[in-house]
Each structure stands twice: as structure tokens, then as C-alpha cells.
Image 1 (tube, helix red, strand yellow):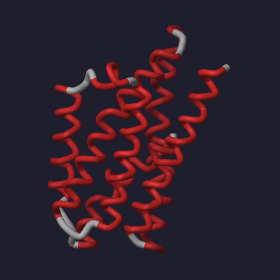
Image 2: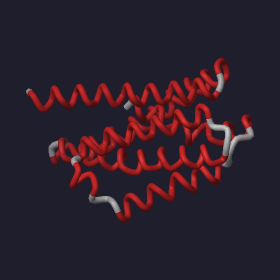
Image 3: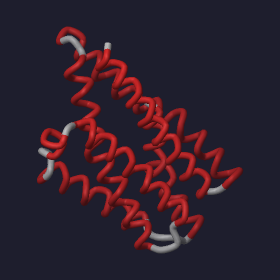
Image 4: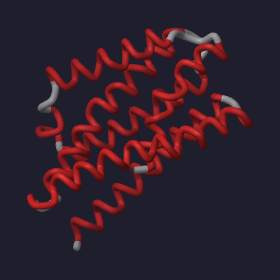
Length: 170
């Protein structure tokens, strides 16, 4: 779950990003993030089923990467809010889609273990990703860290897409 390591980016570093750069507001980012996630789940939860989970998943992960790229160059509160919307929309769809995939693909007798492993992988992503991304901030700055997180998210998306294509073929 390379994507888990990158998702920790805004949970771990949004406060220090705002404090160190003076750009935006933590409250604005998370209001936009949570607001769009709630709206999508409450009123548009049907979208993955109608458009296809894979299509929505890939778009969601790309939205998170786009949010990071906006944060990499953010100079205004508006940019931080837009990044919050993109990241919130991305996580608002990607997490439930990935969780549903785990639940569907694991045999009934192993479902609890599979769900636990999925959750642990998310936590491990934070355990590994946060210090690594912090090191990048220390040596190269927030812009490089957000660009790196975006690149990792896109790489994770590509790896999953390749894996999924192979799984469906064989």
C-alpha cells in the first residue's frame, strides 16, 4: 500500500506546512477535504457502481496526486482549499472502493483477517511514509515532498492497474 504512505502526507504535515510556509489554513484544507468526502459518500456513493469501480478508483487516486501537486506550488488559501477538495474527493472514493475489493476477493472464512491486513497496511504506510516524507521536507522542502508524494501515488496507481490487468487475464 504505497498509496497509504502518501496519504499520510496531509494528515502528518498539513499543520507544519501551513505554519512553516504561511500559506493557507489547516481548517480550510480539512473543511474542504471533509466536506467533499461527506457529500460524495452521502449523495454520490452510486457513482463507482454506475461508472465502474476501476475508472472511479484511478480518477480518485489521480485526484489525490493533483491535490499534492497543487500544494507543492500553493501560494494562496484558495489553492489549499482546492487541494483539500481534490484530496478529499480522492480519498472519499478510493478508500471505500479498495475496501470493497478486499472484502469481495477474500474467502468468507478469511475475511476478518483480510480486512485487518488492509487496515494494518494503511497504518504501516504511515509508520514508514511519514518519517521518509519528513526527511524529504528537511532536505528538499515541502514542494519536493508533495511532488514526491504525487509521483508515488501515480506509481502506486500504475502498479495496481498493471496487477489488476494481469489478474483479469489469467
